[in-house]
Structure formats: C-alpha cells, structure tokens
Image (cartoon, rainbow, N blue to C red; front, side, top):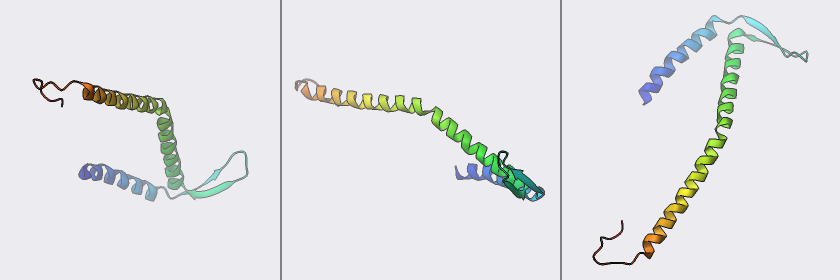
Amino acid sequence: MRWVRLSIGLPILAILISFALSNRTSVELGLWPTDFVMVMPLSLAVLIAAALAFVIGGLVVWVSYFPQRGRARRAEHTVRLLEEEVKALKARLPQDPMLPPPS
C-alpha cells in the first residue's frame, strides 16, 4: 500500500514543484469590497486557490453525509439491542440434555 501512495504522490509532487518554479511572476490580488491588495507569485495564488477549493469540497461532502451517518448510528444501536434480546432469549431456553448446546 505504501508503494501505491508513493507512486501516485511523487508524480503529483513533481508536477506541483514544476508548476511553482515555472510561474514565479508576481500578481496583485485584491479583495473587491475593500482596498486590500496582496502581491504574491502566480503559482502561490493558484495553489492556495486549489487548496481552498479542495478543503471546501471536502467539507461539502462531509456535511452531505450527515443523514447517512445518523441512519447508520441508529441501525447499529438497533442491532445491539436485538443482539442483547437474542442473548437473553437464548439464556431463557430450557436446557434439554438431548439438544446441542447453544452457540
């Protein structure tokens, strides 16, 4: 599994480093409603925007799975209750010497 991660991660890292070294031109980034202006390399601006999009996308997916995780928690709770009930019912069964022991 480690080799798979390395075989995927190293080419991506090489592409990112190549991108950062190829795009060192400075750009001005301004925040529209304010007069805030920041000067940074183009590669840094693009990589920051990509990282923010990645994190925001991950948060959207994480929040969208809330209902499914809630259903799974309720189902696990129901299974635990049913397993306890089965165990209690098996304990109440009469012990007939002709029957095999309950497993």
